[in-house]
Length: 251
Image (cartoon, rainbow, N blue to C red; front, side, top):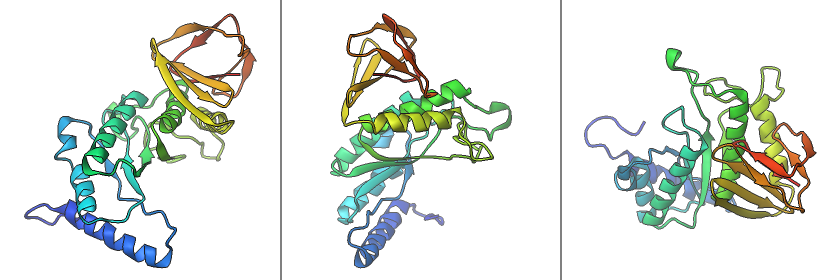
């Protein structure tokens, strides 16, 4: 804690500590990546001018602290919200980074999850199919919005809503979705995403990854004859392809 009563200036103390840590680490390893301390994100109007995150980054800039990356925790504030809320937070963070002159720094998401198992009668645990879609969307959005590192919290802790592995270490359905999405994203060069009429299409190599805000269908093009789901299973594509919030891959 950087607060012990009186005038609160914790962002100044944390920026000073970050700067000292950076200088010390650089003396030992000049190639080390220095990542600023993480902050939660509440994307209201005041986040841009009064939040701890804004004041901390502003103080780092004032001190000319040598950092390589800005880091945040992109949990939605409402545990019932999903990846769309995370994207809103990403945009709020980018605006702050531009405001303080750090728009070229890497952005890391050092903790993310959805739901919450801790609050008794108000527990929010997304069903496995929905959770799998949340995981896949999270990593697609990280690629789309240039988030350099994304760390799921956590794989097996069973504290928040989505765990990626069981007690024996085998993947849950969301865990399989993580592995499948990883394979999709590393199958070729990333070529970006476009959204049209509620359907988002991301191009990776010669494949497309597609999802929609609401369930719908899209016409199959001649280039793609196979549909793959987050379970890893694939099947021949029909004349029209069902698209939903959970991403699919077209080959």
